[in-house]
Image (tube, rainbow, N blue to C red):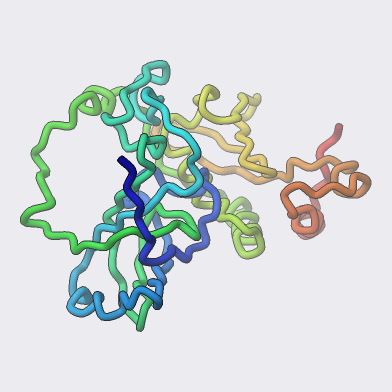
Length: 265
């Protein structure tokens, strides 16, 4: 038996890549909106929704082409796989996602939300109000995560004045949110090179995030971002014509603005 759903709308947001968004909606800091399909006459369905502080959004993990019965969650033992039904992994037999997000306002056929973990152009399947008296069970057991939480290294992210200036330059011009990605990558087990491209230096660590290299140090539970480098060499930027990520002009401008030289081959 097969079941066919017709999306009621689509997510409109700045997040376009899976590595950009937070692992849970309550860890995100962003804003966007759901645009409902006018052809389905869904606008009337929004009557009385405004006034709820939070809503459930049901959607499709549209970028996933397969599923995995066992997955490696970001929390807990780095070598222990878990059954997918015991995790929030997007790699599921039916690629359906569920997020509780904050409702900001409703304008015509648009539902403005914030703090979500949903990618741009995600097909939206349903919307329901969040009801604290029936949806919240704060004392519930959380299974394997009870012990995993004790073994997971979680960190706060801080920025030097220089790196904050660099990051602002990039975020204002790049097509993806580097700040959000940094915080997702480095807030949990930041030096875990089995999950991310990170290497140890004499004065800290360097993590590769797309075409950028983030230089950071660690003190107790603080990840301190020192500075940010382009990953492109001189030949990459000024000789090779291929521009796979469409961002070489940004990197040239970045290096010139901050007086940086391209990496040596």
